[in-house]
Length: 238
Image (cartoon, rainbow, N blue to C red; front, side):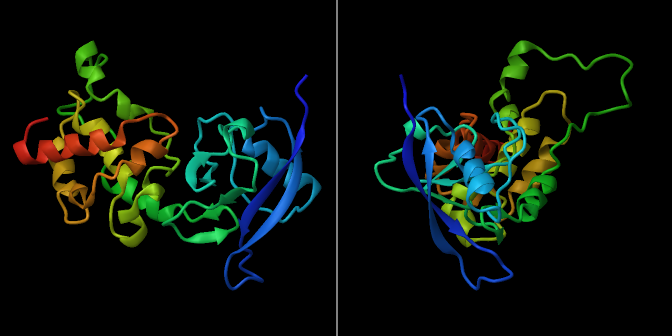
């Protein structure tokens, strides 16, 4: 029978009303190997410190709201199991990097969504509103299938060292959102999106470190998508 054990969590706290700078606090919880980090955070908040603040919604890896740095890597707290972490020492939990810190594990997501909106992440077809479904072959759909999986958790963007140091860079998630429509055979605004991403803060700022691909909880080949957008810009062919 699997038994619970004591696990130490070291959480980077920041309460703007009283703190000048973030600081670390430790909590010990009783957890099973199959418990999630999100379960441990809930236990801490419910039983030890009600001021602990973090985002969560669905709790099943769909909404993307609980992205955070766990043991130095961007992950979703609801998908990260205790048994998959090195719990022999304290498990560190902190907010994702590159976005303004609001409180504890919560960051201001507006800069992230500003970049997302700028690439026009919606279908822009030609002609008038159709009287029937816009048909698409399975092959054409497969061309951009991978980038439809994005849940806007910001794990990829906030793992990018260029994004950490350049607040103007679109970031991987916005480029993934553009890719999803640039390569959609039903869309007519590929050229316009490519021009937006041809900006000096667009795809050319990517340094191909693969941090974004490794961080994506949905398994999207983010770096590959960015490279495909670069090639589309060079050859003007989608």
